[in-house]
Image 1: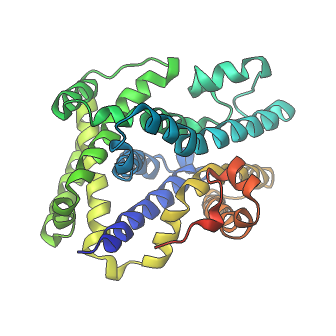
Image 2 (image 1 turned 90 degrees about the horizontal axis):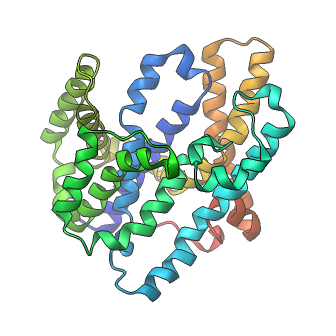
Image 3 (image 1 turned 90 degrees about the vertical axis):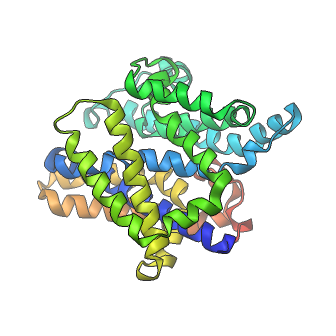
Length: 329
């Protein structure tokens, strides 16, 4: 199986992931249909961390301080810049229209919040970017440490979760294991591809995922939620490998390719549209469909048609210095 096919199928899984993220962010899905919301959130963010780790193979190969610093200034900085710029943009919005937001914002806490207490960020959804930045910084250390000791370290926090907001440590320890598993499986990608492409196993993933998810309603156990997230992630990835010919490859590949930009920009369109629908008292389902559609289409259009023409905008808001120089495979 060619590497291009391998990249395509995993990119398709990322495309499904960003569709689920955007649908989960659609307003008012959480309040109107909590069952759907909880189902999506049982695995879609862990899957994103897994895929992020899987695509971080080059970071594992860093073996010198110079290479680490070079990566820090190049690949990690591309996440840091939009993290601060978009947080600042949301800070402005919440400062000047506090009556329209649930979480007012104080400017004197800006840098303190963004760097030390990111879960109080005016753009709370950027918690994912914050954690990915930290994970990428420490990724080279993973390859220099015994993988089983690290796995044991991370798995302990699935049995005994930590609630600690400083530097989002609690969330970091909860999600790092998915990223870590992704980095390890990427080193055995050929075997992984075979497993994901087995159409018999996909039924097993689905059955086990559904069983584990239902069990979480009756058993309060963080480790069971971890198992549910892994099985749900494997099911989606296996679906992309096993039934890729029945899926819209090009569309999912495009969504996957621009998933970071869609994630960073979508709330600029979801929030004002949802507020407008609320003012006119429009029903839940049309609001969800509209916010989902705008949350996908508008960031995608900006990424394809505007960012390639402006290196500055793509750097500040898109997380890529020069999208026009990137050719999809």
